[in-house]
Image 1 (cartoon, rainbow, N blue to C red):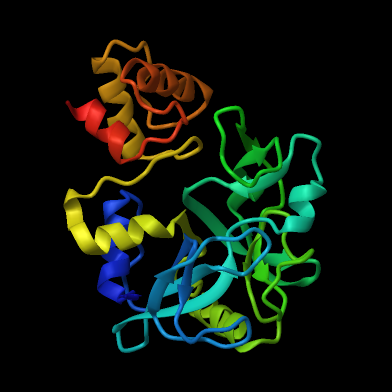
Image 2: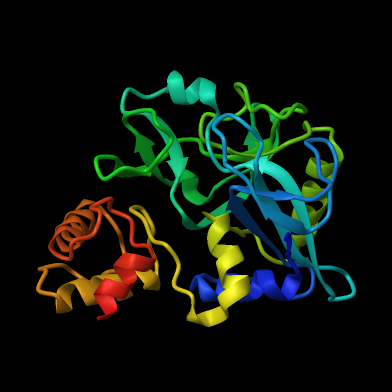
Length: 287
């Protein structure tokens, strides 16, 4: 059954992820959910806020870019747009960097108004992106991949009008439907309102599956964590790893040393050493 993404659920989920939320009249937050599709939506039309999981096939517009905002009556609203949080197949197979295609890390990123190839878009605050690079071109975050922080041009802009990403994204978040399409124009309208009081737009990228599980289980759920995330959930995981005897700084910043410690722990606990902190790893850490 599809899960309705209400304003209250979106704000609660962002709070659950331990990221900041702008929640005054006119404020806009972007919640980008990998592997979810809105019912009735298409790359050129805004559909409903009923979200369903998909197989997240490489190269397709199969993610949700949810516009979570308060309108001019201070009512909470959500508009679920079709988009992508990942580079398309072309740039996965033909990356612009020899270390692999760029993916924004899961977590919250800060963006400001700017341009992408001469058209209105959002660009990273101080032109600083936090990314991981897909070294083996499998579009999956592996323990051998690495996190990078720098100016990589990972913007938020319109994408194409078909179901396929093509060359529209080498790592940027796309809102499908073209620069002149209704979804992107709605996005720009809300950005215009937001920046009247706040210059920075908060953009959170996360696995859609965690939203569905949170909607079902509530605050008892623990999110799946992966390399590149920087927040208090990572700090909690690091504290548990330290309690299990791993020499690790608790800073909430999942980089290579945290991956090494988690892999060691997973091996010691008889778990699959995949470098992901999912339900079984959380259970072992909490025992």
